[in-house]
Image (cartoon, rainbow, N blue to C red; front, side, top):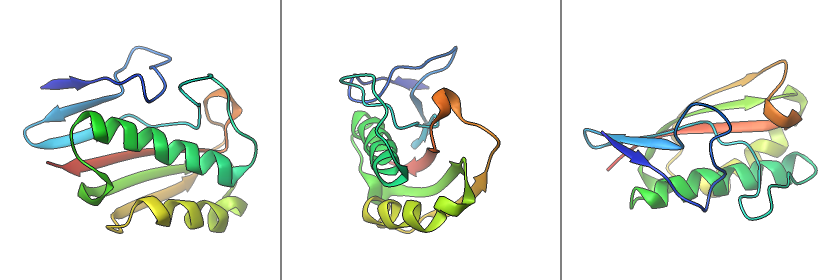
Length: 122
């Protein structure tokens, strides 16, 4: 097992890793829309979805792969009313159209509107 760590995605805010590479697979922890450079969270679902996707991408890059290798995602939304706007941004990044679960949750860390985790193959 190899721990994936990059300064281009937010550091873990708990007892976990940003991601792992195991037996040719890459697993990312859920990525909330925190800008790793500033620690700030952008306003609105579109900007937050964009930042969450960029954070997932940074972890994939740390594993020397891209979005095209992602085959499964799990997406969490604070409000299912944001589904269409979230999808619009998500589709720009997850071009391989991975299998996906998308659920509404009561709350997310730091009061953000979305979180994305991914599984990819090397």
